Length: 133
Image (cartoon, rainbow, N blue to C red; front, side, top):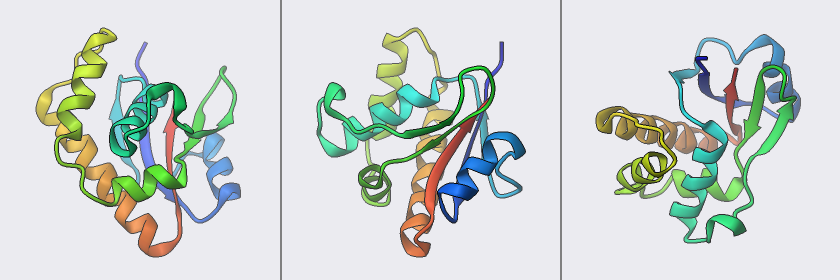
């Protein structure tokens, strides 16, 4: 089964919640077929230096039967807006340990593009979000 992963910005929590059913709109970064929740938690651990079991993790909106929107914690948005050098490689190693093989160039692209969204989120005060369906 394929999973569509869309990273996007939302003006507020209500806008993010509306994306559960309606989708994020035209400015979303769209990828597929990796565990978005675990990836966000891994990025938080890698970028903040926290142990994986100690990360805040994203706020989930929706349910397990349909689309799910994940709001990135502020600490991760801030960290992604900074220096993400080396994060993609370490993330891909973690995904490989879980049996997910992600192309190296694609992994670097995902991290770089999400980091660019984080910079924009920090500048505009929007929420960095991810929709998985």
